[in-house]
Length: 98
Image 1 (tube, one colour):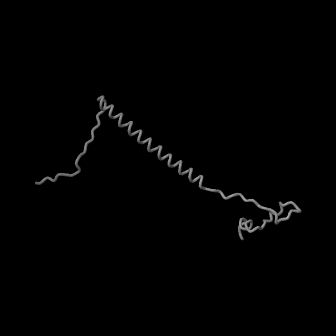
Image 2 (cartoon, helix red, strand yellow):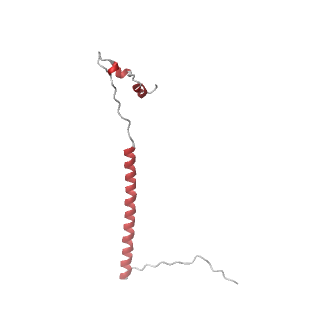
Image 3 (cartoon, rainbow, N blue to C red):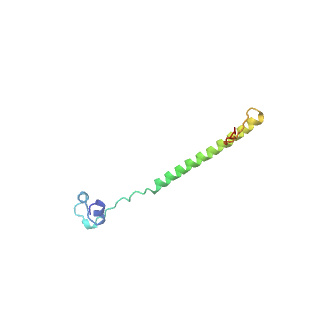
């Protein structure tokens, strides 16, 4: 029994608490109530929800920006204000024979 919690579980009253008991009180009838240990489940779940929500918001925002950009390019190219071409060049080099 090295920890105060072990002493309290075993029924021993620490000296600092023993001095606070009113005189004439039977120490065997004293009940010491301890605070429950802290649960970390709530903060962990909250952090997970916040991170997941942030990722979802960023994905939706990226999708909306992509759709708006595609629509803007479509409108501008239809009105003649912008032309957008994709060039696919072959990366293979032709060998020239001498």
